[in-house]
Image (cartoon, rainbow, N blue to C red):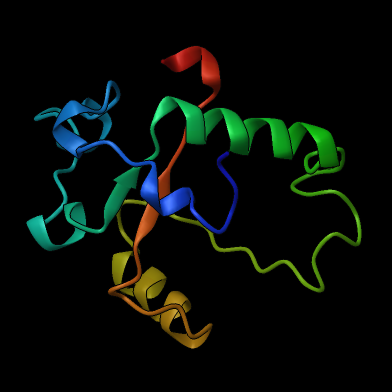
Length: 110
């Protein structure tokens, strides 16, 4: 059974990810290889688990998240011109640059 304790065991290679074009397509801003290596697409089972969890707890009842679900919510405006500002924003929040990023889309995307 898939859960948060083993979700990272349910990945697909980025090259096999149906939506890889969003990250590797030539008409988009291509990410450096070191950043692409951090992207970890979830397989269909893990994506369904995550989708069902989000729906069950009604995470998006309020925008952007259900009121009082998190202690605080920080926001940043992302644009083509502020990459260094966004890197600094992540750094100030203690988000390591080498941290893996799990990708999941609506289960209808598989």
